[in-house]
Image (cartoon, rainbow, N blue to C red; front, side, top):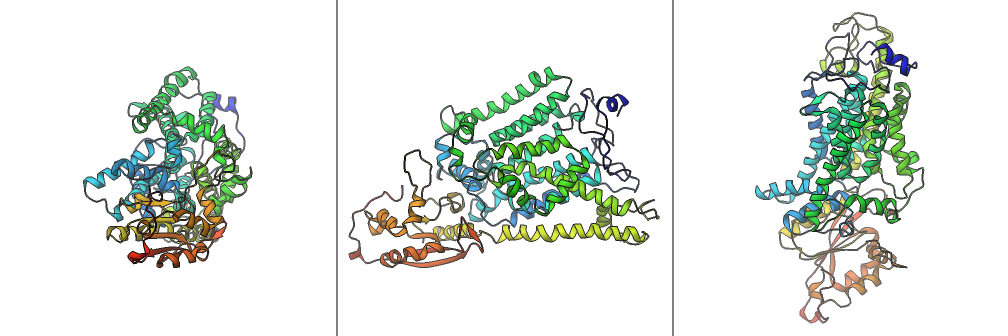
Length: 610
């Protein structure tokens, strides 16, 4: 870095991981080094080669890019196979259900699609997968429920790789290794990233875009026929197609880059506007074809969520929720390390991006964990920086003894993967310091791994397990009509059942009618009277063959089951803890036993199952 840079921007004193391969850039504010057509020096960025290296005097401790890809993809594929629980309805109802309807001709579209609030671009990704399964005649229950998450896990692995590369570019090899460890171990990433949310795809695209766009000094290097910055802007545009609220992130990044670049006219008129128009045009054309009319999803989405109270229909939270509960819950035991990493690295602009996203989302009434998922990789990167700093402080600075790897002992991950005795030839201070690093490693492992496994394998598993059971019943011809007496969208639907039989759930669509109470709330308030009102005009022959509900409601409608000949057919564990303010421990499936012809006395009606 030249002296003019230092004189113009100055340098403050900061903690850095020095000569052992973790040297960071002198400043996160970069003067317009737009003329760079070659990769940055090793102090600032890895060379564009298959070998990801950082400056080190301990021998070859770097990981090849191929090995990083293999680790990330293998980890996420295994991760996806262990996710067997329900988290949020949008995973199924806003992606897979829409894709299933597109390919197989049946499936339910929620009210958001009636209002044009969702783009078809994201569901069509999974529609392609479903079409392939159908052509290969693999569209059975196992493949229909497993392959979407396996498919998504590949994208999640790509995001992990790019977080490693972003961390390497900013801080060097050692931080990148620890950042990847934090990213893969974090319980919320494990629980959420293999799921088919648009937020997960947004997170992957955001990480890719930050890698190509954020370090301004790297934006003129070329990737194929595009510059790094152009590729970053393209990835950012696609993330906005997936989730229009991603504009919040790119407004900050775009303005920050505009203030730094010396090619402002080119940046705005030759890159941002054309690439943004390309992404918007793609989204508009796809939605025109799928909706059958011109539908501007971004406009509808922003109007509904930001310019009206529509986004608050499903509940509101206090303004501080993301700061006091959301991010602390997601980051968990990584949070103290992340805060330390932010302070030690002094990457204030990147920290500002995290604060900006949290602040803007805090102004909205309705809040969810997954809304801030795109900034979680950055939080993990800062946690990795803090661990690398601590490792250097505790072990490497104190170790002047000779080791088989060179003048100093290799780092934690080099010893882990090499099988070298980590204690032999090291000083007492270094051995004690290494025990501290292991203590941090084990603390993170023992706090995050159990949480990841419990939430992915146990908590709220009944919602998905019951659909597997119903799918087997439907394939055997034993399930003819199914009614879900649960909070709306509490289970997957046709995308998991994959059988075109009549099904019904309690509607909870929003309405601006005065005094409106949706069906789910009506049933919860007066379950028995609601049921008799629903069935009052039905012939007993068209009553549902199966009724699904949570065990907390069984006692309230047991009289109906006895009167109409329903018996408990299956009891499936769901949760140890309250969900939606009450304990829903088990999912119950009641099956109707045959009645005698003399019992069929009511007039037929088809109003229950559309």
